[in-house]
Image 1 (cartoon, helix red, strand yellow):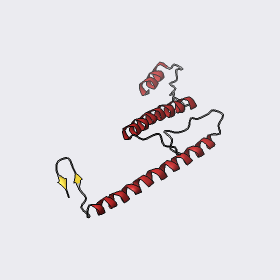
Image 2 (cartoon, one colour; image 1 turned 90 degrees about the vertical axis):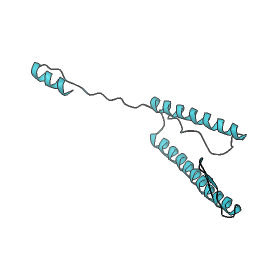
Image 3 (tube, rainbow, N blue to C red; image 1 turned 135 degrees about the vertical axis):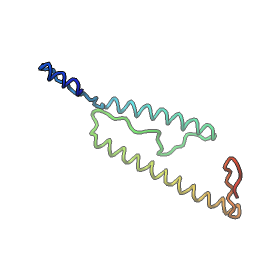
Image 4 (cartoon, helix red, strand yellow; image 1 turned 30 degrees about the horizontal axis):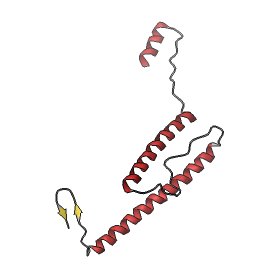
Amino acid sequence: MTQEKHNNKENKSNLVTIEVKAITTVADANEVILRNRAAMTEYVRTELQKLGEPWPVCHLTTGLFTVKKEDNPYNYIIDTANYMSCANVDAWNIFFENIKFKRKLAALKENRLVIDTGYKIIK
């Protein structure tokens, strides 16, 4: 771009270099949301089948909501923030449950927690 401007000055032409940036649209956002939701849905379905579990009946979803053109963008932001808060609460609950189960397992094993590193077993 610098070379073009320099050449324009030498030629004393009226050419102007204009920098163009793409603007993200609602359609672009929805495309990403739908693609991510489909990938997450497939992942969850596969993992549930491996575990032999049915689809859970709860507030868990597999992605964000799609954006509607007529929606107030702040309503969408609020809905998304609420969804993300629920997801964070679930994630932290799983983390805390994991800690509780590790402690119970250690107590059942008389405080001997066995860790298999793939090379040797540490007790």
